[in-house]
Length: 283
Picture 1 (cartoon, one colour):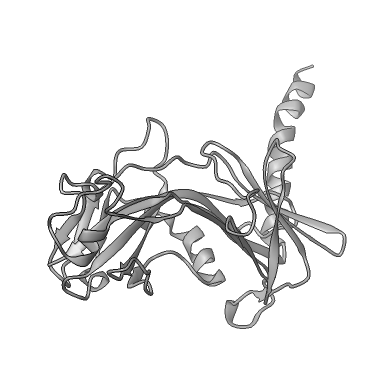
Picture 2: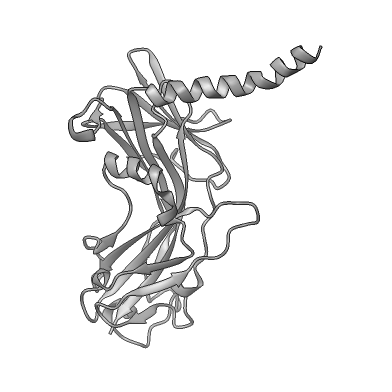
């Protein structure tokens, strides 16, 4: 009876060790993101550099940027040269909240990249607290990665001063403190992107971003995630290079997941999160 009880208790551990061993030796790797940005309303007079405008004043002084959700996945093998994974094209790739019957297909973009945005399908949405499964089917074999408990928007008070936007000098760093995470919960990863806006509301090329973009950067993130969990976030002054310029400051709070199926490399990285957005105006 005692021996049977011990075997029963150790069986789940043995299964976990076997799964981990399989994932360590797996050749296929998956990196992906599900990122949501809410609608942003920007004062037109603020973008033009005037002081008089207020956000939402009678609905006449606002330029609105619609909400958007985007999903991306890179699916590849570790056989690439110089530790750069080699992309696998021709897979059927879907994103699906676990427990639902509403998968969203990610379109092939070549080189092992797949993606879709809410601009092209209403089925792509983001919900905090959900578990998202990224699945790739290739040659009748299924590979699954997963992110559990997708986080809600993280409110950053410093991005919303009474004036409605942050004032700072050009080429000046801007820092803010993140709120403490709930008890017994790890702080989510935090990524920042800064985008300039023209006086008529057109977005320019990002002047700063620390969001991983290459498969190797994603794999490195799995090794050193603590860098992105710090309570204090500092955006370098180079993110705000021009005087009298308006910038969108986008802060993404994301949770990291990884390989779920045995045949997917343990270092696979999947991210899901949503953004807090503020406006900065340089003097």
